[in-house]
Amino acid sequence: MRIKLLVLVLLAFTGPAAAAAQTTQSLDMRIGEAPKIVRIGETNQLVYELHLTNFASVPFRLDGLVIEAGTPIKTYEGDELAAAFAIAGPKGEAGPRVIEPGRRAVIYVNTPVPAAYSRGSISHRLTLGKIGGDDASFSISGGTATPESAPPRLAPPLRGGPWVAVYDPGMERGHRRVFYATEGSATLPGRFAIDWMKVDTSGKLSSGDADIPSNHYGFGADVLAVADGTVVALRDDVPDPATVSGRPRPGIADASGNFVAIDIGGGRFAIYEHLKQGAPVAVGDRVKAGQVVGFLGFTGQASAPHLHFHLADRASILGAEGQPYVVTSLTRLGQYETIGDFSRGETWPPTDRSEEVRDSFPPPNLVARFPGD
Image (tube, rainbow, N blue to C red; front, side):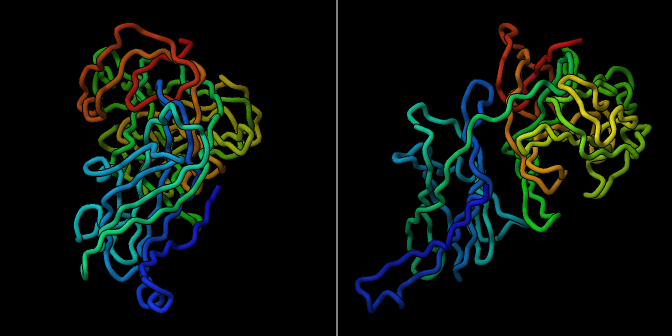
């Protein structure tokens, strides 16, 4: 759902005659894709992006953001606000949290939902500093939206394990924060994307020479349909690189390598990327949940063999909005504290005991085992 909001205007005047002279251009505040409530791990979280575009002739510094639902449900300020704030395109030179004239900022919201929240509409209150001139501070409110909940339940895309759910919502160039405008409008296909990588109990990705893709534990693993559906798009003409170090560096059009897209109904499409050549399905095939639809590979823009999986609202790799889902069943084995720990090949910290988790979206860098061999 796209919510179109008018440009917000700050009025500061003492009478009708002064209104025209003292009206000040402010920010356009928009929520492009409706906020989502999804169970991530054991916590319900609110996930969306707030877009702020400066139509004024002076820069504004964002000093605070309060998300409200009658009462405040989340306050962003200081370092937490800076971590959620990003400028579209090259960074400006005016300082942190500053939106220069003509620039757009995006606030990436990922926050637990308070127990008291009644699931009604939310709105936003911004505290801004006007840089230059009188340096006046002021507040504006807007960006009303109603979060969507009850994401679809999907079967696991892989079998066995251990598999690591590699992603970091706060990473500057991670899936969560890369918009694409390849089809006439900006979309965020990787909003809920996960790169699944198989490891051993020591956190290693491969046995033997790691430069040989087939030595990686996940390489060639069966990739499974997450729901009943119809194959609506497929690519299977990208050869598998002979070595990791000698892999090509494809452009944006070929970054996904071999892929499969499955229409699972309800306006949702399961997208599998970086697959090995030799797809066992074709466009038009009907598939059942758990059926093999591909094999984990190393094609496209990838640093190591893995399965990129996400759910989208269109059968487009880059021109669709990423959608939430929950996995029907997995066993939680452990979790890396940071994506950096995983990247350094450290041993993953195990849980006190393995536990089955149902109907939950995997949290960042979870180590999991799926049902099956």
